[in-house]
Length: 436
Image (cartoon, rainbow, N blue to C red; front, side, top):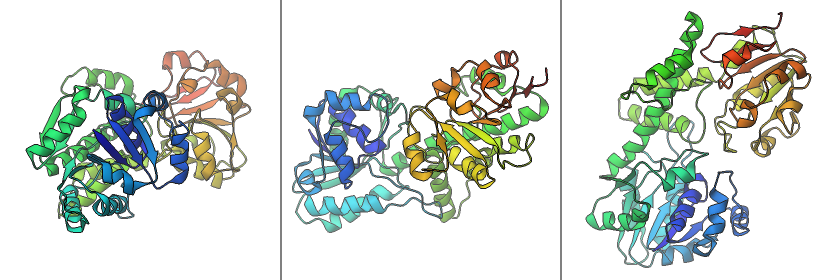
C-alpha cells in the first residue's frame, strides 16, 4: 500500500517509519527543506530512541520529499500528522491541518482515505471532509478517518509498534476495511467507533493522565506538610487495580507537546459550548503552580539569587527526548537569570535546543560533575539516568554548599541520609545533614 504522511515531527515521522516497518511503501512530506535534507541523509531531526535505526533498516521503503503534489497524486492513504499548537486563548490552531487539506484537495487523482492523526477538537474530521470534498479539483472519492495517536516522547517507536489499542473513527465499512489493511501487520486490538468519539478518546485519555499527575502532585504537597512520604503513598495506591500504578510519580509538573495543550484545548472547547470542566481547569492550575515548586523551596535558603552559582541538572521536560516544550527549566531559569544568578547546566541531549533560546546566558557542561563544581545550590528538573546514577557523595565533594532541590525524586532517602547535604524533593521529608 502506498502511504503518504504529511508532517515529519514526532507524530508524522514516527508513524511513517513504523508503517514502513510493517511493509508499506511510505512517503513523508514536509515543507521544511532542512528537515527533508537531514532525513534523506539518514538522520532523524528529532531525538527519539530506535527511530534512526528503523529509518536505516527500512530505507528502501521510505521516501522523504518536499514534492507534496506528486506524493498526493499517487497515495492510497494520506496521514495528516502536522502540529496543532495552542492559540493564546487555549484553543487548538488548525492552520497547518487545513493547509495540508488544501494541497490534498488540489492534487489527489484517485480515490483516497485521509487519516487525521493530529490531535484535533471534536468535530474537526467532519469539517475537514466537507472542506476536501468542496475543494476537490478532480472527480475522486475521498473519506476522512480519525486515527488519534497515543505516543509518549522517548518511547514513541515502542508505543506505535506495540500499542495497547488502535482507535479508528470511521463513517463507512470501506474506510474501516482500508484502515485494517494499514494496521493488521501490527496485530493490535482495534477500537472502531464514529469520528467524534475517536477524537474525544484522544483528549479524554490525555487529560485523564494529566489529572492523575496533578492529583498526585497535590497529594505530594500535602505530604510535605503532614510528614507523609508520597512514594509510599503512591505504592499503596498503585497496588489497587482500580487505580493502577502508572502516572503516580509526583514531581514538578507535566510538560511536553501533549498534556499542556490538550488540557487547555478541551477546557476551551467545553467553555465554547457553555460547559465548564472543573477538574481539567484545576489540573491546569495545579500544574502551573507546581513548576515553580523548587524556586519556592530555594527561597528558604537564599533571599535572592544575585551572584549565586547555580547548577541545573536536566533541561528537557522528560528523559529520552530533546523536546523542551513546557519544560520546567523554561519557567525556572528565566527567574534565576533575572535575579542575577550564574547558571551552569547539563542535559545529555537537550543542550542543542536550549542554546537556541539561551546561547550565551548559561554555561553548558559536559557532565554532572562539571556542573556541580563550586555551586551554591542545585536544581534537578529532569530524571536522566546520568543524574540518577551519580554517586551522592559527589554533591558534597563538588558543591560549595551542598543544597540539592530535586524536582523528580531521583534518590532514595535512606541513601541521602548517609551524605552531608541538604536534600529537598517532592512530597518527602527534607534531609539536612549539612551541619553534622
